[in-house]
Image 1 (tube, rainbow over the protein chains, first blue to last red):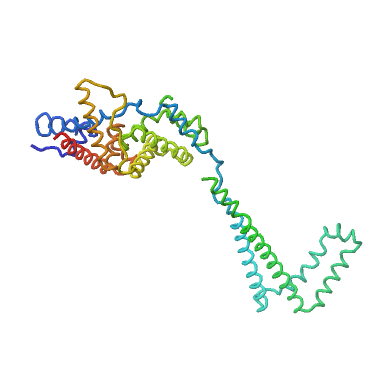
Image 2: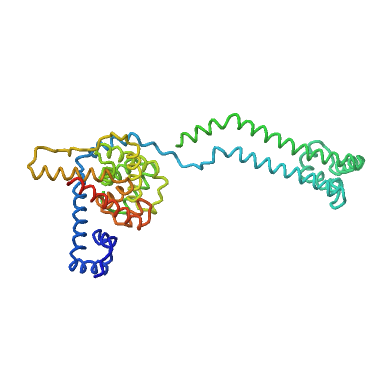
Length: 211
Length: 180
């Protein structure tokens, strides 16, 4: 006689077998005294365990239970992006990186123009003087207020620019670009330092308060 | 509260948003099974109440992260079982378990024998290793299926069967020893 394994019998007792397997075990149990005894023992054990299930009267009453936990439920905070307190240094770091890239690009462009691979910046400026200084908006506002004719302003500026010579022109252009970028980097450094001194305390309190 | 899944889902959403009234309804519905499970594992009504409180407070704190992929009751059972097992591990060795049954009075001989038998079985359950005890309590006290127990304990069904088999084997041996 093929006896079902203990796992199979346990699943039978726990009603975890499918219908066909359950029927197979049931018909085996009708014929096998040993397996039937094992199964009955398991059922007896199950009933003994279930007899120890406590009555709800043994525990705190519903009202008392709620009273005990209701005072310990922390209030909910409005959902917020968790990295929000760290946003200022992240943004400042990103801005600083962009400025450093800009610095490298400016220096690179000047180097390429020096070896003749790009037009000289001084020529670009000379070519754009009539377009920039002769802009109708300037003519209608500043020049009109100062009483300057636009054509004369453009001509005077072009002459002054030409008179400077290539060395001074490049010096002015590179100096302006570099100083602008360095000034912006300095502003980023000051803002970052301000954050480092003032914000982390507030950010820590914010994070601790959220937990 | 009726067993209406949509109403329960609504209550869970409201409780997750901070509505204590909705949470109190969930507590009212699930308290019996939570304290019963806790009791099966810790073996003392007073400690089971404490564990159940901890479980509900943890549930309240973690409700905003509850995604309803597993059922709420499965999730709550898991919190309860973990809290109860933690309580058992933290317990000092001399901490007493419930010995006397509440409401016990002078009883006829048969009743006294029955109560003594229950005490033996409770004692034997408490001597089981916590993991096997949790599986047995979920099966016999809560009558969960193997699949549900596997979901609560986060273990494969095969492990559920082996833990149940081990628990029953140990229980049988200990009760046989008591009888001698």
